[in-house]
Image 1 (cartoon, rainbow, N blue to C red):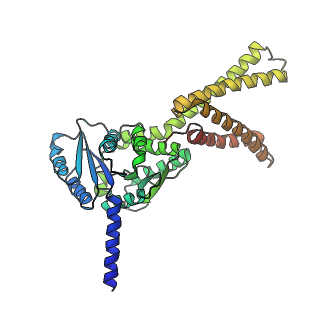
Image 2 (cartoon, one colour):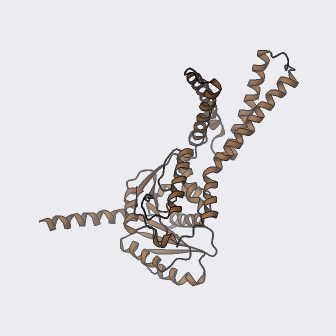
Image 3 (tube, helix red, strand yellow):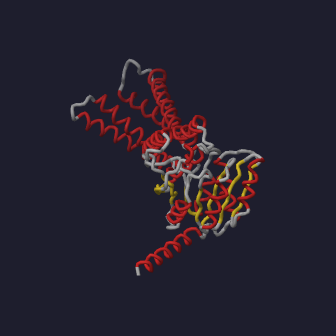
Length: 376
């Protein structure tokens, strides 16, 4: 009886696995793979994945026998770049192929070709994506394990903390290449800018701005041969990744600084040169100069943030109304927060510095998620 029930459970599990992958396409970008790739692709095929797309990202002639072997595996297609164009472009090549030619692929997975992503984990992510939720599912490795290379452990933890600070969600594994999403998100993924390893980080940021949920799914943590098979260059590609993470915030700071200088410059120009109020200090003139300077600097700040910081391409008037609402709320919160802290005996100067620093990050988050929200 026990054996009968066990066999029933196994058959049920096999049925669930088949249903998860029967309309799934798995995309694998590859550059100069070793002999493990054909074996990996064969396992994916044996498990019933409807479509397997491998993108040869400009591998040299000596690696072509491996790709020819892969191409002979059932339900597998190999696409070729004549030169190396980067992981981001390779993924987009695969996405476009799926969009144009594989109309029955309702779930899309991406995986790396270096042996880090097991077939059961691929099936598990396909099952999660089959639930139909508008989300990006991320295969998340456990970096607390003792056999994780130190540079990978520390690098991923730092990146996760920085991402949480700037984009509001803690992702345990921001560098994972095992991802899954529904077919409806293909045009969105293709629209995200990026050519090399930084593309995957840009996808996370774009999802954050568009309000697309990002759901970590625990997977097996594998680092074969200390991860020597990776084509990730620690210095060059890490620079690209952090340039992406910090880029918009750095531009946001520059925009803010420029507009602070503009605000003070316009105020002083009006107060001293136009109204000649430098010695009189008339309250009405000071208020008028302040309002005019703030309107000019805020308008410039809006345009800079819209075009240069967040690259907003939506309706400008809607964005401007949201910007004005946010600016008004920030002013009220600044005044209220400073007053509350000063009531505790804290210097109002210190209180305002603390409150405005916190509100600065709040403003950045609301501008990227609401004011200049990226449309999915």
